[in-house]
Length: 221
Image (cartoon, rainbow, N blue to C red):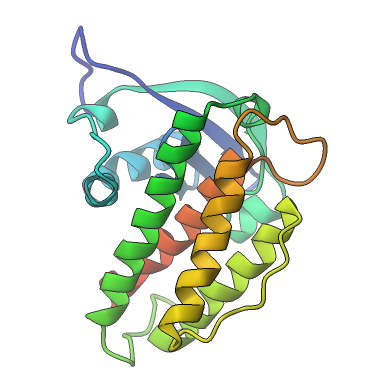
């Protein structure tokens, strides 16, 4: 990480430690979440993604501190699972289960919406056929779009929200799908969930998944 200035604001991060992979996730920045082979590798990857994530914050009109990546404060370590090692942040942080305000919910929803906007922009500028990944595989553009929508449709069931996966070519259906998700996230303000996924974790997972694939598309275009 970059040297930390004496008065630099800290960025609260939790580490999800699996057997083969570690995720570092910024608690207050849905989608800013990267992985590595160990803790230092995960934090370095998170720092490296700061410039990319700053684009999301700008889209959401949420101020992103210039030193956010140089002042990580690891506030919790979670034991990972097979999901972690497979390549997704799958554990809920303790802070995610605490009540949060309407203001926090609105900010969170804005960052999720911005993650979608970045994803859509990247998709619109990408070729249909992408370069193969380092192991010779990887989905092409349209398959990634379908995959992201399918995952989101599955994720929101954890908030007891049942949605039909929209056709990515149907702009009205896609907009309605996303509005329903944002409304469900915002409606959780002040709530302490007894089951399912807390809204902050769901927001993080949705934004991370959209951005992870947006950045993949950029790197393979």
